[in-house]
Image (cartoon, rainbow, N blue to C red; front, side):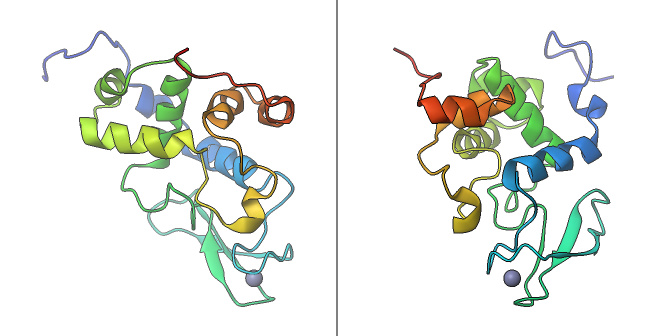
Length: 166
Ligand SMILES: [Zn+2]
C-alpha cells in the first residue's frame, strides 16, 4: 500500500471518461466542425482510431491528402500524459490550485505540472493551426477559465479578464 500523500480520497483520473475528453477537445478545437489543419478544408473523412487510444479519432483530408487526428498540431500532442490528465489539470487550474497542488493531485512531477499548466494557459488545444485560431488569437488565460465554464465565446467577445493576481 502506498502511503497517503494527499488528502484526496479518490483517484480523480480513474473516474474520467476518455471518450468525453476527446469529445471536449474536438468541441474546443473545431466548434464549427472538423477541418483539415493543413488546408482548412471541411470535407474530412474519418480514418480509423488510434491504436493505443481507442477514442482518439483519425482523419484524412481528401483535398490535400493530409492525415491527422484529434490532437495533431495541438499542445496536447507532444506530451506523454493521457488526455484525461490534461483535462483534470485544466479543471484544477479553474479551481485556482497552484502548480504544486496540481502536481500532487495528479501524481505528476512539478516540471510536468508546470509545463502542462503553461500550455493550458493558451487554451486546451492551442498550438496554432491558423484556421482553428481564427478569432481566438487574443485569448489567453481567459480562454482557459471561461472555457472551463463553457462560456468562452461570450467572455472573449466582451474582453473580460477573469484571471490574474491584481
Ligand atoms: Zn487538407
